Image 1 (cartoon, rainbow, N blue to C red):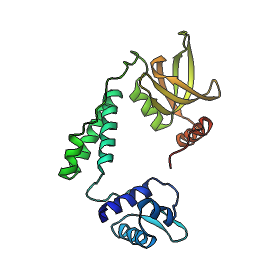
Image 2 (cartoon, rainbow, N blue to C red; image 1 turned 180 degrees about the vertical axis):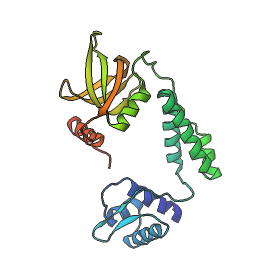
Image 3 (cartoon, rainbow, N blue to C red; image 1 turned 45 degrees about the horizontal axis):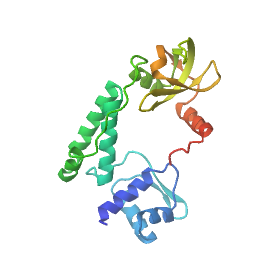
Length: 229
């Protein structure tokens, strides 16, 4: 393994963690000795990486650092391309356009060899089940989620009966056949899932009183979903 690849792998190990991680764990994951690990951390710090920590305590990478030029492995290139193509084909118009723009920006800063890997990727997105016509504006839903805004929605149950709900949306889940808003429902006083194709009306209101991240963590805990590292 080249030294540049080793530094890239170490940086990725640090990026995946939000809490300090021990030098031994980092050394095991990157396949180097502790001595080499310390040298690699010092090298990254010398290149501007805001890595905090010390032996016996652990290390954490503060946000805002990338190694120039932007480098990805072949598997990472394929993952980015497949994910971007899926979003471009299956998400709403603005998000699909953003995915295409993001792939173009990544291609523009990649070295020539890796750019060819991205542009010539043979991982394709197959046809999916058509979504039900109508429903909520996904761009408006995403805007409300980002802004932590309450929504008043008209929602139809399986029999078509419509009720008015005041909800705190904090996540949007994409399935092949449906899009689902995950929210705290004031009427039910609990977490509920709302299919976007059953939302007939939508009006944005004031900020809801809790943080989106806290709601997401609580929902994950109730669902038994392990949070990302």
